[in-house]
Length: 390
Image 1: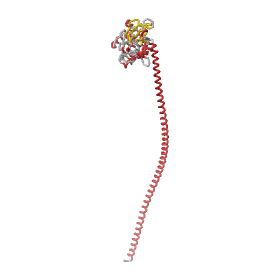
Image 2: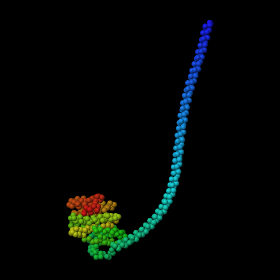
Image 3: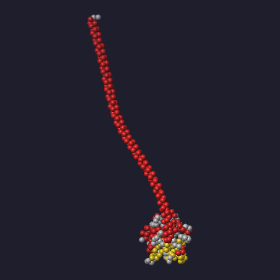
Image 4: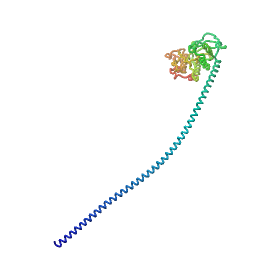
């Protein structure tokens, strides 16, 4: 080996060593760079963790603050609840006091009520005693007023009339001619003296220019009542004259309806005649000639109490049904009576149009038709008829 080859070999080794050292240095640099990169990544991660921790701390602080606020609110609500509880206790105590006072007042009221009931009972006893005394005095007074001894009546002639309830005769009482009605109807004859007296007290209290005047009665033995004596009756005059002129019909009808209006206005209960007919309308002459004052008789004679079912040619369709009776049944009978005075005839319902055609006075015909309506609610009242006849 020559010098040059040795020298080249040495140079090659040196270069190789240098290359190796350079390679090692490069590797060290690369390792250092890699370590630097890893450290940077670690630092970034630590920063992120630090930031997350700060955020969690902030959130924790916020939650703590919220919890403190909620705690404060809860404390306030607790204080309010305590106050309300105290108020409720106070109110409960007040209610208990009021309840106690109410119970005391209730007890006092019961005591006063019992005292009042006792006083009422005492007053009722005294009132009943007073009523009995008043009733006794009334009976004594009424008996003195209208109870006429049988021996004071002197009959002066035969019977002048007879009906379903009684017979009528002329008699003298204290120098005055009167009509005596002697009852033969069994419902009336079987009344006790007390029942008969009560009925007569009602009749004795009725006063009207178009009602036949009640004079008195006997309550012992035969039951009789004494009335003013009238010259004639509507029935007798119709038998003589057959029918009347419209002006006379108006005059007589006005007297009849005024009497009915008075009876229908009686309080507390209306008196229903129930037997309006030509026989129960009495007449006395007036000036000018052919004018008559009409007076209704047999009013209130036990029909209002016992509701005797009187069915005649003058009866309304509902007259036989006691729970449907009203003052309008008298209005229907009044219409039949007007129809009879205008035509002189009494015909059944189905033949009445024949009679209507015989009436030429339109006002009276219209009034008769209204009174004869089958529905009682559609018939006029006595007040309405009085206005129409004037």
